[in-house]
Image 1: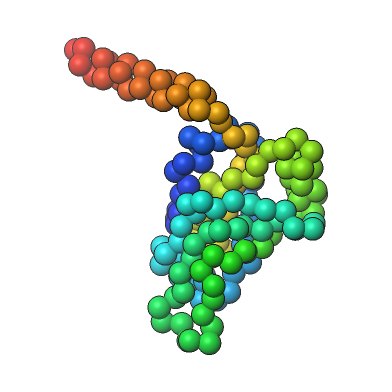
Image 2: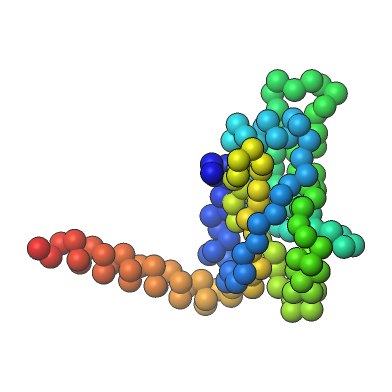
Length: 149
């Protein structure tokens, strides 16, 4: 499994709950571009349109060696491939409970490109400060352990 892109801000900005894995409906040139590592999940999110889920605002630049007629839009919405039961439960969580669907990482499994995303709730600024304090305390404890013989 090769990790192609990671959304580093996701765990800082959101309290992550359940994680899901979905396939992506991509064109051939997009697949080539993603597998060469040219993809960004910064600012991306999962939206609900009808009874389908889409990855919105992810940046996949056109593949350099692709034919000019097969070029695609960089930030177009890409359909997520999930089971119908999973889609129904996710739509319920996002609409009824007001939770957000956040993409975490994009990777390959065998020859397929998969997206890992999570159901999350946005953190307030005081929650972010608390997580910074916990992270700093963990670093201090690690340093203290290493310094003591």
